[in-house]
Length: 177
Image (tube, rainbow, N blue to C red):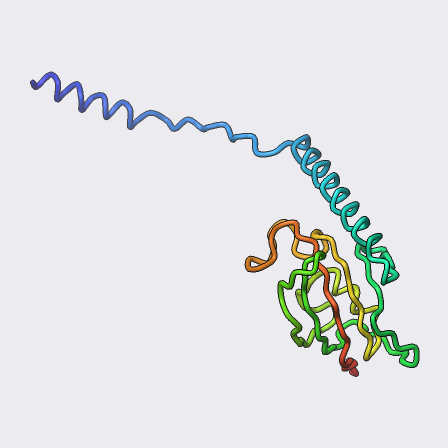
């Protein structure tokens, strides 16, 4: 019995006195992995763009304009008498809704004050509001990567969900310093 206890104590002592051996880090990502992810995302974005473009072709009531930022829009109400466009740090009052491109309503009309390029908001609408003049109404068709992307909004809008939003610019409060 004593021999077992002495053997146990000696074993514990020898093991605990050994120098720690560094473990090699796991490989987390390679450039090939990232290239594959980018390739896959480009393919998904292309498929979504094709789906939106075919949906737009079916809508013969409106003439859509394709933006350089990757969304489409048409004017429901255009005002050629106004000339002031919102600028950096102007505060605008808008009324907008968010729908699926098939017409289902995610969020009914709501009003919001938005400080141009200084607040977190739907990326495509951040760009689109800068095209608007006071009193104008524009409907935007936005692919998921310019809306809520791969995460959705955590509530009603799912992942990779393209949206449609009708925005009315009610007022522009210019930033006068």
